[in-house]
Image (cartoon, rainbow, N blue to C red; front, side):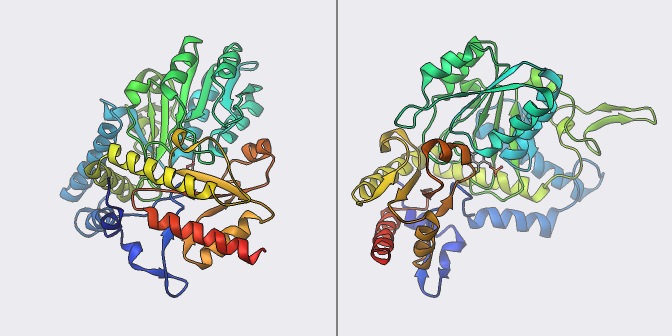
Length: 407
Ligand code: PMP
C-alpha cells in the first residue's frame, strides 16, 4: 500500500490551506493532477542552468537542452514500452494528438462513404475532430453502445465492425464512468476487420501500467498534466508505417530536412510532426514526472487507486438520494461521477468547495454521454496517488452538509 500522507509531502500545493483554514482535499485529478517538487525543480533547473532552443544551435547550452529534451522522450517511450522513441511525437496534449491524426492521417486516407467507429463514452477530444473530418469528407460515424452498467457492449462493437470502419477510436478509460475498456481485445477485433486503431489514453497512462506494444494500437494519445507533469506537453504514439505514410501536420522550422524556393522535404520521425520551437521545459518536466511515477511504481499506484475507489464507492453507495454513474467499483478506475437527488451538481461542488474539497461539476467534456444517460450534468470525484481514506471521509461528510443545506 502507498502511504499517501508521505506522498503528499512531495507536492508543495498540499502545504496550503483553502478558504482560510480548510485542508485541501483534491479530488479533481481526472481534470488535471498536482505536481511534485521534483518536476518543478527540473523545470527550474533547466531555465537556470541549461536553457537554449533545441536541435539548432552548436553551442553548449543548445546541446544540453537538446540532450535533456530527447532524454525525456526516451523516458516516456520506455514508460509505455515503446522500443523506438522516434514513434513518440511531442504535442501539446491528448486533444492535439488526436487532431494531428484526424488532420494528417484522416484527411489523407479517408474518403466519402468511409466509416469511423467510436463509442458512446468518448470525451469531446475523441468526438469533435472526427465530426469535423466527417463534415469535410462526408465520412459516416458509428457508435458502439454501452450496456446497462455503462460497460462497452462488445457484441455491439463487433456488430458495428461489420460496417468495415477505416478507423476505430476509443478511450482506454472513461473520464465519467471510470470504466476501463478491454483495449487489447478491442484492438484485435478492430484489426481483424481491417481498421486502424486510435486509443485515447488521457485517463489510463497516468493511473495504470500501460504497454502500448502489447495492446497493439496504431495510435495512442496522452497528456503530461494528468500524470504529475506540466501543462503544454502531450504525446502521440504512432506506428512507424502510418507515421511515415502521413504528411506533416504543421509546417515550419524543425520539421524539414531541406527547403528551397520550390518546396520542401520533410524531416525524419519524430521531427516531421514537431514544427516550430516546442514546449522544451514542459517536455523535460514530463520526463521528470515519469521518473517520479516510475519511482513509486504504476502497479502500486493502480492498486492504491483501486483500494480508494472501492472505499469511496462503498461509502457513497450508502448515501440516500445519491446515484453513481457506471459500473461497480471492481470494474472501474479512480473516477466516481454521481448525481444527488434534487441538487444541481454545481451546488454540490460549490458547497464541497467551501469545505476545501475540490471536485468537478458539469458534463466533463462528455455532453453526448450525459444526454445518453438523460442527465444534464454530474459531480465527479477522481482519485490519485496522494488521496487516502481521510479524503473520502471528508467527501462523505461534505455531501452530508449539502443534503442538510438542501433539506
Ligand atoms: N480524453 C479523456 C478521456 C480525458 O479525460 C481528457 C481530459 N479531460 C482528454 C481526452 C483531453 O485531454 P487534454 O485536455 O489534456 O487534451
